[in-house]
Image: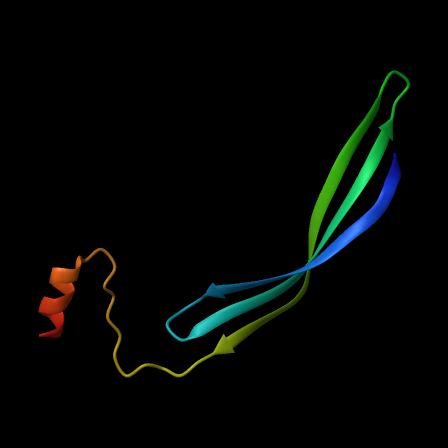
Length: 83
């Protein structure tokens, strides 16, 4: 197996909700490399992609005074709860 060209890298950032007042922030390095696989009968080219986690942190916000889970309710039902 040998590389066929250059290696491409790209920084990726991801935010994920982890609670009412917490957010998980991850920073990845995405690495792409085109490789050529040599065998006695065939030569194949493939692109290999991998992500490496560089940093991860939890951002903590303020705790809310009240919390409503309105998932699954339509707008009429939400207005009835507020009134």
